[in-house]
Amino acid sequence: MKVTQLDLDDFLTSTSYDPSPHRFREGETPVSERSLPVIYNCEKCGYSISFKTDDFNKHTNSKHSNLQATDKKKVERAIRQLKLKNKSFLDFYCPKCGQATILLFDGGPSGYWGAFEFRISHIFVLKFQEEKKTIIGKWRKMFIMKKVEKNDENASS
Image 1: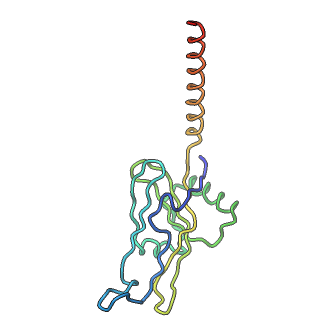
Image 2 (image 1 turned 45 degrees about the horizontal axis):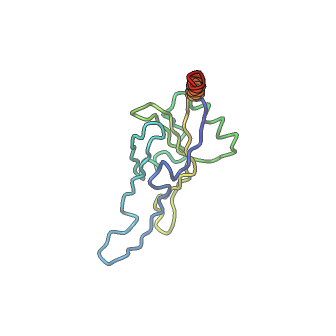
Image 3 (image 1 turned 135 degrees about the vertical axis):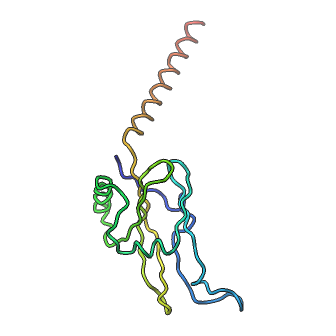
């Protein structure tokens, strides 16, 4: 399996939560009391997974992983190679397709009120190497089919 980094904007509805005690209008709920769901759309199957601010709060500086030990080691190796130290993570397997996904983030209390904030910095997924071989195999088949079609056209001319 191979660890692949994804573009945040392509798969997340939001990459940060920065609470503020300010209100825009009188009578409005302060921003820090609103909940912000972060929705991740699976890169492989498109399944939507929603996370709450509390999910990131629980995983801040946590060592708990939802991945199998072998998958976790591959991800840790990739993170070390990229020199991404002191990042919190939230990892999971997609409920629909089973693809391992890791969200790296920085989180902690902030501002005057000490409300929890976070910023997602990276998304990694584990991909099977067979997928690459399958794609190359499909390209070869297409190339061979075009070659055969071209030969058939030349033979009939």
